[in-house]
Structures are given as C-alpha cells and as structure tokens.
Length: 280
Image (cartoon, rainbow, N blue to C red):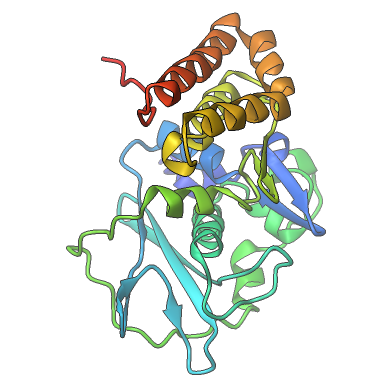
C-alpha cells in the first residue's frame, strides 16, 4: 500500500533559504512568499487572523492580566488546522503593551509565517537549521513539534473569536503604518523621508510598484498643489535607485512608476487627490 503524502512531507522538503531575512540575530521567512508557495501546493488552504473582545470593541489581538498583547493566526489545509499564538513585539523584538497598528500588523504576519511553518514550510529555520531534511543527509533533525512544545504559550484573556464577524476596516493611514517597520516590507521611514528598497525580481517589482502608489504624496497631505509637487520631486529623488532597478527588471515597470509621478503632479496642480487608475 502506497504511503499517503501529507502536507508536512511535501512542505518540509522545500528549501526556503533564499526567502529568509536576518534581523536582530533572528531569522524571518517572507510571509508573502510562504503563502504563495502554500497556495500553489494547496489551493484550498485558508488562514484566519483571530479577533478578540475589548472594551472598545473587537480587535485583532488579545490582552493578558499583565497588559501584554498577543495575536493568533490559524492556517488550515483540508481538515488540518494549525494555530500560532505569539506576543506583539516592537522593532527590538520586545513585547509591548498598547501596541500601535504596525506592531500588530507585523506580529500578525510573523504569526502567519509561523503557522504555515507548523504545516512544514520552513520549519527547519525555527530549529536553527540551515537546510531542509533531505539536504541534511543522515544527520538527526530535531522534531519541530517537540521543539515548539518546550515553549509555554500564555493564554490570552479574551472571548473566543467568531468566524462570522466581519473584519474591521482599517484606514489608509493605518495600512501605511502597517507597512512601515515590517521586517518583510520594502519601506523604511526616517523622519519625513520614506525610502523604498530596490526590487530584485519581477515579483519584487510588483510589490515595489504597489508601495510607490501607496506612499505617493497627495495634495490631501499638503497645504497646496505647489507644496505637494515639491514633495513628489523629493520622493522621486530619494527613491531614484529603486526606479532604475525597476528599469533593469523590465522597462515597462519604470514607465509605470514614472506614469504615477506624472499623473500625481498633474492632479496636484489641478487641486485633485491622485488615485491609481484601476486596470480592467
């Protein structure tokens, strides 16, 4: 009788080494890449970011009696559901109380990557290993489940999330804050200066184009059209290398982002708020 191939046996063999990032001596797996691989292998896979009751309403994090905050994400493949609970952390990987939007968003995305890891994808990086089992030869590989069991997970004080609850809408400003500071985000903010990382491939180019359109200065953020045009010129100057990197991948990407700037300037001069034109 042939052995049934499980999600773990498929996902745990995938080498994720080209899609990890080091920060503060910790290794992070790109949640976007991990989710893309998971959907390629198992199109029916789903994830749920859990919401909890608070005095002000339902929020995507729970709070314990000491004021510490936690997020919870469940990834389901068929009948197999894995849930990751982790604390909300700041940029120094210290737990925080009263977290802001991007701290919650960052922790949710990390929890998503780890929940995917519980199904096997990238599990070995959380063990401190460098290669997936098949590439390790005959060396003993510690059990991911045994390693995870050693970590005592706190139980948040919150009501059980309801699946039929509609997700609360976040403002554009909340989403912008959510992108800033994310370990897998191509965005860095220093004062009023927003720097966008250079894309490395076509997949990265799409993300960078989305980032340009999200952070493009708009007249609604400035006193008048002239001030907005100045901000647009500065935004281009700071991120010129990223624009040139887009050209190296495909000149059409450079043309797209230059079109963003041209349309945004025209809108500012007309006193209008620029929006990306949706393609059919």
